[in-house]
Length: 200
Image (tube, rainbow, N blue to C red; front, side, top):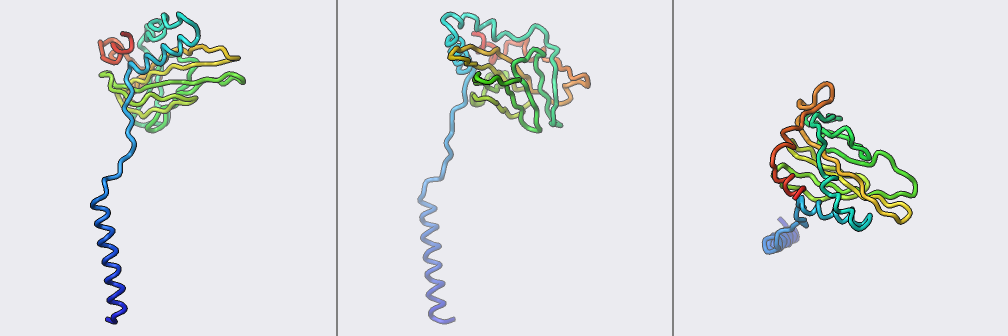
């Protein structure tokens, strides 16, 4: 081996060793982590939206967050083979679509000159929640046992108003019957932490 080749190899080894040293002493890279929201965060934000419509509207919070009296809900599997999403038939003004691993909630219609902002949160019955999301379209991962709570705000000609609350129950696909009906009694009739915190 020529002296020039040996020198080149020595330089390469020294560079590799230097790089390894740098990697060993550098702190590990990290991604920015955001604390998950709580049911209380959603409750406070919805109450704020209600009060923006006019002083005293927050008093209707309990009425707006009560689940429907019937627990035989419509359901859809969409394009998912493993999951289904159940919802009360009176989910207007929202529309829900289900993909293989996510669900999306949007407005059923958009009116020119009117702006909408939805807020939503997905939690299990023990009130362990993901981030609270907001926007014109909200997406949530599908996870059996989770409930999704959606509300929103609407602004037209400088006048603010609030949109109703809608609940979605994520279940396994076999819990949605061939008639597209699911029973969600067990979700809403327990004293689960998620409801205690939403209604306190």
